[in-house]
Length: 80
Image (cartoon, rainbow, N blue to C red; front, side):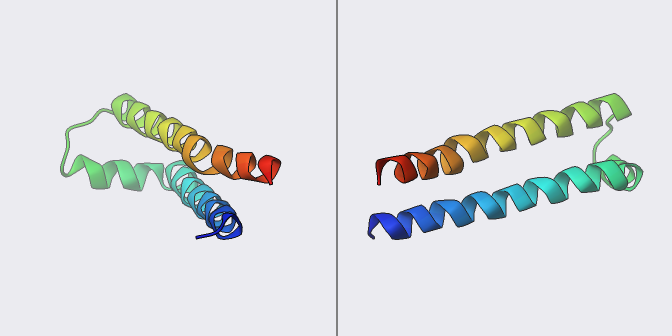
C-alpha cells in the first residue's frame, strides 16, 4: 500500500465516521423519546442516565475519529 492509498483511505474513513456521528446525533435530537423507550425495554435507565451515556458516547466517538482518522490523514498531508 502506497502513501496515496493510505491517505485516501484515512480521508474516506474520516468522512464515513463523521457521517455515522451525525446520524447518531440527529437520532438523539429528533427521535430521543422513541430511542429512550426502545432502550427502556432492555435497561432501566432514567432520562438523565440515558442522556449522559449518549453524550459520553458521542464525545468518545468524536475524539476517536480525530485521533485515529483525521490526525493521521493530516500528518500524511503535511509530510507529503
